[in-house]
Length: 173
Image: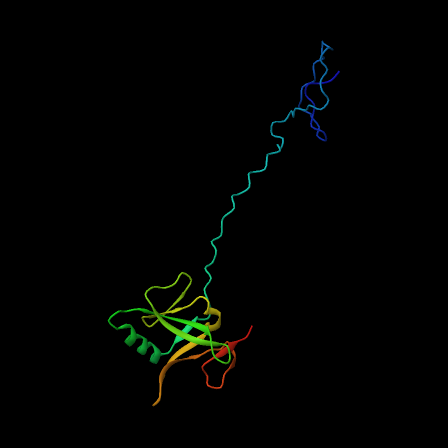
């Protein structure tokens, strides 16, 4: 005869009462069902649900190098130009021109273009045309005056070749 209470495999059930004989043989006990006699026996608990994933905020990409630096003389000259009767912004770009390939181009604009880079230094804003950004990035803008001319000049670390007169340049690929 089978007992209704069976000890867990590998444990001895000393305190369990003797099993009563079964009078009916029509319902056999299933050999796979086990009931632990000791309520203090360790129970198997379900795993806790996984913790929700914490979304990390993406760091903002900040350039380590300024797109353009402006010397104090150039800042002074830009302020004088922007104090005019119709204040406008100055956009710096490059054109295909000259014997070396590219030439700087400065123009007045009313508002920034969709992808223009805005450079602000000492209260003066200058725009860099998005098409010229890779040619100009890291350059220094200066204002030079001599007895024959007065102009903005650029010291560009990206220049690989320049023409003899200094009006056009080529950047490396």
